[in-house]
Figure: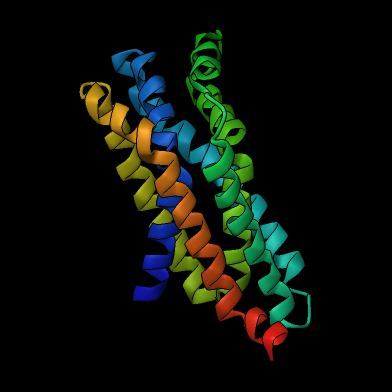
Length: 199
């Protein structure tokens, strides 16, 4: 159980640490009485990504050999290397423009979450879900919900503490990249992929 919780915490933080900046921008451009709608929108957007990842994980679950599934660990490793070498796109302007659209705050936040986090989240979640049994998977998903709640709270606080946001913006991608590589390497080791090719 502890391992599943740690997996959930690590996976969520690695895919969302940069998203804190986006949350700060979203909260900063949302009226005070609508801030709870940001939380609902984040839940909706994250749910779409989690369900998509689960569907892909179920499909890949039919692959007979664990070491083959372990090859999915290459995805987070490559994502981490790419992040270290090339950085990431600055989404702040896109987020502000998205929030100015005259439509539902919940829908806007959900679309922004999917658009800005989609590839990263699915790339990390699918390999983890494939390697997890049902009990671990349930614990990981519950952990995601708690982490999402904490991150929304912190994102709202960052609006009032811009120096912390600046620090995250400066170092966030390096932390994220290292955790991606760590997660990917762990999947390759745990699934026996390294052992298969080295043995």
